[in-house]
Image (cartoon, rainbow, N blue to C red; front, top):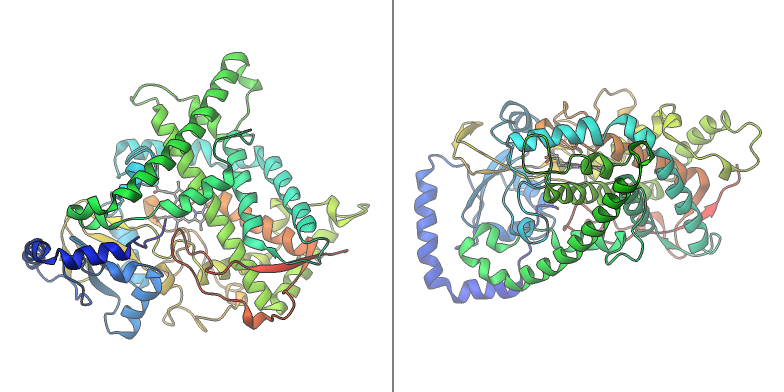
Length: 515
Ligand code: HEM
């Protein structure tokens, strides 16, 4: 999910027509805003809607422009309907939000789509409030599910999906003569891989395929007007019905996955069962108490792990391929690094296909690691991280802000800020070769996985998928740009919506390499 609001034109029209009544409500909000002493300066907004229209699409760019070019600076305010919101655009303030005030700001907002499409607040890790149950379930995720050991146990699944991807690229491009949609192929692979690490096999004849599930989450998981102006929630009723229908399909898929495994658990010994995420979670199924996860919580966790794992990795990989196509010198240097490392592992092997680049090889590929860091600097998939919501009043900068304030950290703007980065808008992976900046959430000018207690728990898996897939894509193929186009023609705009995806799908021609 990204912080973009779905606002239909009709809604704006209705708001205008109903403005006399709504103005009364607005006056009440204005009174409330005056009660907050010294709220940071806000850009002008519309009655009732406040600044919602600013966030319609590409919010991170619009907010960066306000901070940098329109004099609003590192900390400014917004009124999203009736919700007081502040936007942070410096590393120091990001540190205050994600480190010093991390506990107060560890809540998520309550969005209608979480009720309709997901399993409600507090059932999955992503949208749960910060509470003891969330702390416990997060511990399960980090200590039992998303561990290095389990990643290693499930490595073979990932590698076999990767082989399938490489074969599909070869086939779909008709042996390197036809352009293919890079992102779609990679997204199919990450969707299959994520479902496989979750539950070891792809559901057969499922009501909803992995690719459809990705599409549903991409289309529907987005805040709507009623989240910010509760009195206008009724205007969202058509979308609500669509989200509920989508939820039914998701729930039927979850039921079939869970039922099948429960049957296996009844028939097989513990050591004969797959060691996947589902097994860890289902082995804790039970009543709502301190030792068990309820069925709804398990479904919520599976959905969040799927949603968290698929799009983030595939969108990052698509950006990476776009940058490499635009910078052939970086592509060549990367291929040389990968070939050099792999030549030490290919003795006696007949074909490049026989050996995949895997996690162990990645350690020996510093340039690959710099490329991935640089791609995530320029194209963080959650450019505003996830909004944090204050559980009590708190101070930020010179302001005392009330409980319920939403805080947006513009990680995209901070990662392009000349105060922290030389040549900030350039793709220049070498910047990381002598730098100690990493993904750990300790460097607040660089936050692709967030920071603090709500930092991404899937960081290891996400990075492994991105590194290993990218290395294999350039090892196995030379990549060309479709006829009549050049590197300059590759559109680098982003679309808004879920994550920071590319607006225009990347087309390229993979030509098999013989090393
Ligand atoms: C390149 C890959 C990935 C990127 C860039 C990424 C990025 C992020 C970011 C920025 C957040 C918000 C952190 C915050 O609020 O401070 C997040 C949260 C989350 N991510 Fe990831 N992620 C990736 C892969 C994964 C994977 C593979 C999984 C699991 C399979 C995953 C599961 C989650 C979950 C469950 C949360 C919510 C954590 C919470 O609220 O406590 N992510 N991710």
